[in-house]
Length: 237
Image (cartoon, rainbow, N blue to C red; front, side, top):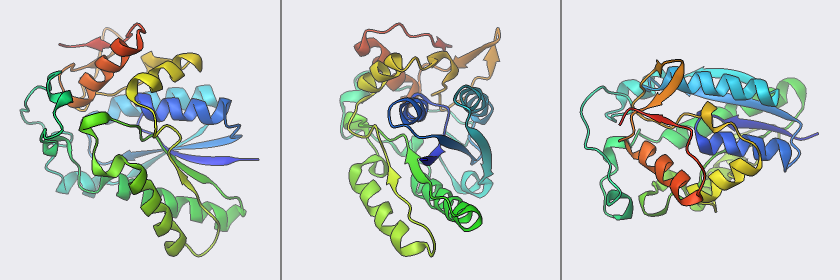
């Protein structure tokens, strides 16, 4: 029996990774961890996580990390104006990503997930792999989305736990957004139940609404375009 704890945001990448684990890698039991770090899109993320947890018969748990949002200066956590992301920006490896950077976010997520996994092992003697939906974002990738980062965190996991064996895996990390969306279509992932927007626009006419102009929305749009797959997303702009 294979068990996995998935760091779940409700976005395309973590959702496709979850369906891939269940259908292709034969993980029997999935636990979804959604981190509440004061992000503007929390409500939409939680809705998508719960809906996909239901479809995959996964356990859902929300972890409070409000302090991370309190110290963050990112637009993700603060309702302030930001410069619209353009197609040209996606081709600029010098583009400033600081408006979207939350301090040590993926490292904080993984160390919290690791503590949860070790706690589960102490209680049940069952190991869980830790899964994060990192992908190849091309020229706009962040330092904590790379294979090097995953390797380093795996080394940390061995030194920071006392009981159990834990592998941190990023099954989609060699894929770009277009390839992830194509894989999602093969797996019948309900893309309409995924949410990528950093800004959060709640629900309009009973549908999830994306802003259409933040970095994550632009990556989502271009991913569907280059995949040649109809984008079911509602964009405000």
